[in-house]
Picture 1 (spheres, rainbow, N blue to C red):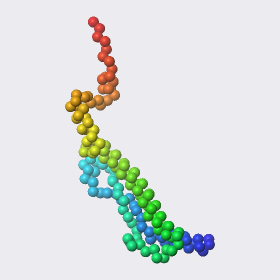
Picture 2 (spheres, rainbow, N blue to C red):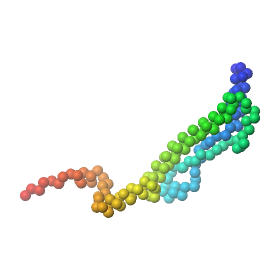
Picture 3 (cartoon, rainbow, N blue to C red):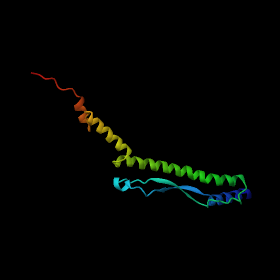
Picture 4 (cartoon, one colour):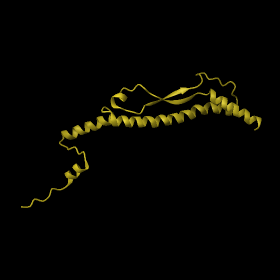
Length: 140
């Protein structure tokens, strides 16, 4: 391996170890999780790594500077994807289990309005079939 490639590899590894990045962290401050029995956790983005005033004085090559920019970007993309998927699953579970969720509140309001207007609530396929099936002809 040529000396320039070894030097670049050492600089990349040193840069990766000194760079900052992002990681997904679970949130623990949800009151509804215990009330509704939600199993999944909500996620948030947290940082890790070097201090805020990261020194890159030993980094003068474009490749080294690129590494310092790429590690935070890569970890932000990966962690952001994990958080988006995890929070979507968490939101869906909350909507299904919590009575005060936005979805259940909307459905319950719709059901009340329907019943006040004289509508019927159909809970099964059999109830639907009975409703639309014509009555048998009356024979005397």
